[in-house]
Length: 237
Image (cartoon, rainbow, N blue to C red; front, side, top):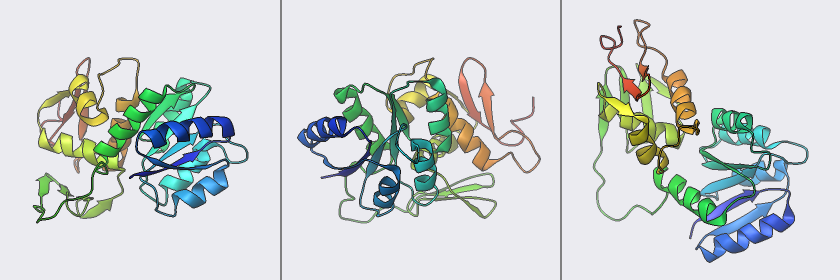
């Protein structure tokens, strides 16, 4: 049974969400302030954290920064304000997904399960030998077993979602990926042109990878379509 961490100062909401998630097969531990939330998150006991933006003392964004700086824990952010700027800041800092309040419990469960699937935590590894898969495209090397990515020998710190996104790019290197296709594979939902989550994750990955050695663009936007992972030669106009 997956254990989830709920960080929200609304005690009544926490009780309702906890009751619903427990009925869906999750264990939930709720805390009501940022400092305790960070302490619990860093314990390594949780598969995912649900984090409210509006917290007393430390706000949710600062809590998120401190968590993601020290541990690779998937975080689903909640906000009563529902402002685009909250969504953008949360995704830039490292949130895996974002939901406005009031939260639809069915959508909350669907988002949690989607995050756990794409971060490889939906089920425990079974018995037997796992094939050691290493992908190399140009100066980027991805070791799926070791869950690490190197660029020109330098180890990159990627979130689980960024790791999965890069794997998709490497497998499709030289081919344009549509936003619709990427949304279904990476976010596990239909593409919404008003949802900038996918673009923010691509932007974060692009910053971490940097350009090719010759300064040309590594991940190129294709206007009105999606993205292309290029070789240095392909990136030239």
